[in-house]
Length: 246
Length: 259
Image 1: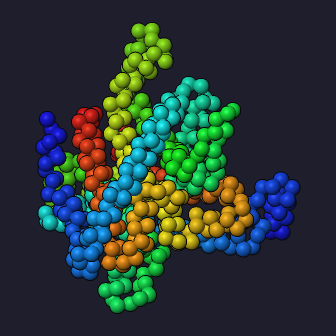
Image 2: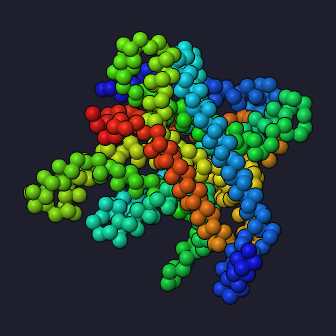
């Protein structure tokens, strides 16, 4: 441990490469906290958006025309407006209005929660579309075959359509969730101390913007690389032999 | 003429959304601010629209430069000379996977304020840096679009051109690209949609776009009843601009779909 500290302190003093997060306690803790917040934002909004996506796709699959319209409206509204403006809308407009309605001056919902809500709804809108197209991609003949075997509608959905459509959706899902992880940096705008915000505090204190930028980019390369690898493993583990490969 | 039909079938939900979004500012106003809120919004509307024009302008510039560089990078990705292919691959993946906001900060903080070329001094104001910052991820995404488009052309086309003694460059220019460009248009427009969704990020790094103007208006008026209408208006503006593009993209996707 001591060697690492000494090495990076030496790197700064001899070569001017200031990686303060490796030798300065304060900067290191700030950065680690940033990693924790980014991980938390990512994990919470990934799970949330999967739930929203599944719910929306299910409503589109089974619901009446009103439910379908509602889901369609939600998907179009959130896909065609910038996530940053959505975040501002929730945090600066919906938040205070909610507090006002409840007669409370203190914000009832923290900025971290608003960021998660906003990111969840944004990515959820894309997930609805991904799951829906996954469901549509299940061949009609497969469904008819299940029907011929005497399965009822619920059984066909649970045991045939759902397992196949989730597998079809995985590739699109990976893309969207990677995009979601990248979008967590938007929370910077409402002062959530995630990794970009922590880094900006570090570089304005320690005057090492270039070094911190490179650390940030490397961090995201690793995070997204690890996530994509995980999803690929999942894809491989769930692959049905001989099915879906062109 | 398939397009008008497909446009028509899902019209109701669209109008529902538009109406809901439009009603949002109205409703909040009627409830709390009344006449003065509406007047304030009307008063500031031209300025907010001007800010929005800045967003559109920045997105056009970033798209134009990003497309030109991305096309080169995409062709580099199918190069037969492996150093070029590997380098193009890496650059593409790097700019596709880096968060937009981080790249923006990178350009804002690390590009110089001006560049001196002999006697010329080219100033680099924030909006130019913003364009550069947005152009980089566009470049990475367009590169993938171009590579995908070229590789979607059946290899028989390459072989036939080879049999007719076309060189590789000529095959690409005269046979492959003319066919591939059509297929690239819908995903390229998708990249534009993604870019437009990211453009307001420039407000964080000090470019005066619609979001910056909206926040300035809110602090000038200092009226909490205006929060909903102003941010609602921003959402409506972006929706009205982006939604037709999204529909158009879908229509083109269907028309160019490989059966």
